[in-house]
Length: 210
Image (cartoon, rainbow, N blue to C red; front, side, top):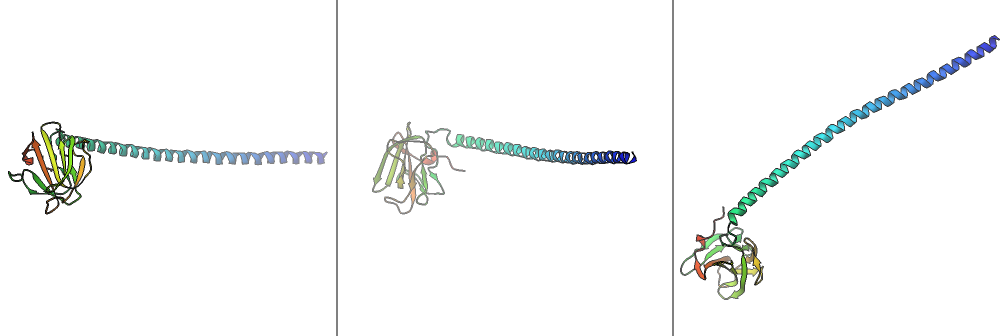
């Protein structure tokens, strides 16, 4: 009988010990899981903060870029209004690059000469239509543009033409490259403005570049 009770007690102790051990393992797992959950939550919070800060920065950057774009557009629009207020009036300096006025208008020289390196971009002084492109012994390569009103302009001593007869051109469009063709001692652009076929001083029409 004592032996049986001893065996029963041993079994009870063993079962108790087993469940105690299992409970400990389960409790430990729950603690570890809880710690992981807590750590993950903290990590997620940190990530959220980083994402938020990056998002804020990106938003601010985007706004700054939008503001810069807006300023550029306003400045471009202002500039466009100043230069192209009258698209058919040939008041644009017909060169995109450095130049010096080498000869002014006179009765013997009914034009304005711009000294510039060969290959400098020549611009149409106003909207118009290319009436003629020809080669002259004195003027070299020439372009003549009608501006659909009383104005016409002539560009001479060109290296070459970049437009064709009958082509419609816009104010500021590159129409040729400056050169040293014809009777010319140095590279320059010979520029004439005519009103109803009569030459006028270009300086009374063109606007000086800032």
